[in-house]
Image (cartoon, rainbow, N blue to C red; front, side, top):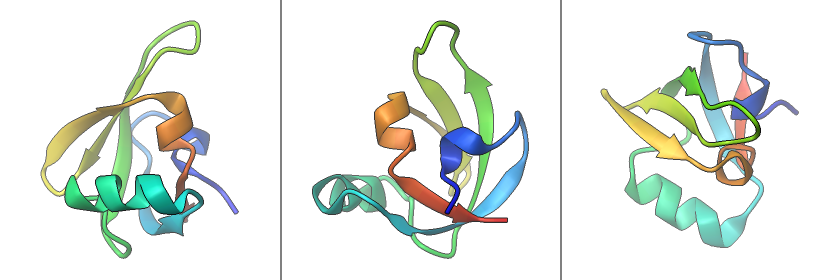
Length: 73
């Protein structure tokens, strides 16, 4: 299954779930709920953080955190 880091810039997908149970609680508190549309907005060079748009705002995440968000589409 694909995760958010597999998206191309500005590509949209639907959040299906998470791979990290502990981190999933924090991500859901920030608006990353299953069934919500997400898009990849910015990618920092050299393995830096990424910015996603979810629930109407941009959220900056480490790549390891973003890779725990499973997507469909």
